[in-house]
Image (tube, rainbow, N blue to C red; front, side, top):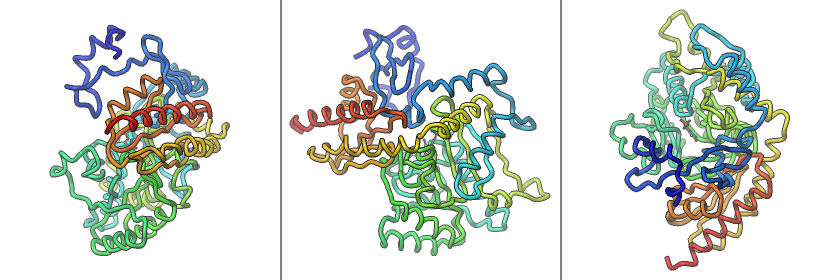
Length: 428
Ligand SMILES: *Cc1c(COP(=O)(O)O)cnc(C)c1O
């Protein structure tokens, strides 16, 4: 569709690029983005799209927020990077203190990394070594949930739903963990209890995306479900790892999803929106109790991990600026307003044939189908209507910037209704 207008760099680079989650043989040439501003993505050739995705859920303040850009520019000129081994810098130390202050309970220690998947790897290592350091070396398995997604590195893959996730192929190569349904009813709770009780001394931890399972299908669960999971983890001596990489920083309407359940996990991972959608950074937070298990005279008790670009100053400056905006502007209020706008805006989709459910939580709006729609075709149609929406699996969803206006949301939901109505009007 765009190839006649494609800029030279796109055509020249195309034979050398390998895209994410893509069958390259049949892939369309991707859209050439040349600049961003607020909720808009400008394409080569001059078209502008309204963004419904916030670039994989990162751009919580919209693109190019002047406060974040200014902080990064200043940091870029002063010191883009120094190693974190033996050298300290203000952006990381300030950010660690602020994250510890914002996080629930006594999640007071912050380990920085460069991507969400690595933050999850660190969380798994922390949990395993926590038990090991306390003389419980048999605790090596994790309980994870169907429809869960925790990243693409091999450790994270092994706790991502093997059937629903993208990692089926590697199943036999990965450590075998235990998968179970999110315990939404008494029966589910009993299954979780029984599994923990049967495997009590081999379970290192339970990993969960609190309140919303993102990449596994935008599936919601209630706060009391999360409280049940936390309660049983504690009872059976397993650590609770909350993967807030998607849900953190206002996405579900509170700063962290755990806040809504008043649950304090033992370990918490953040990433994605941490830098306001500008640059890769993630963090693994641990409670005082977890941290203290790593203290002692023995070198072997220490956490042996250290990504090269750990705590990159430029990324930490961006994250501090992003947190400033959460303090100065009412992002959580905006997220709650978006919940209403998305719920109302998408409600008419309930009446379309093939639609299983329409739901919204915070700045997440979801239309779920009974059967998988033709995602590439839907994507093409959304593009023609001037919006950036990327359906996957059996859902079409919106995760706009928390700063998206009512008008933006009306346009996005209006296009979804238009495209889905046209689709179902055709013979199936
Ligand atoms: C995106 C995501 C990850 C992986 O983060 P990357 O930065 O892509 O490595 C892990 N967990 C959850 C819940 C995510 O949404």
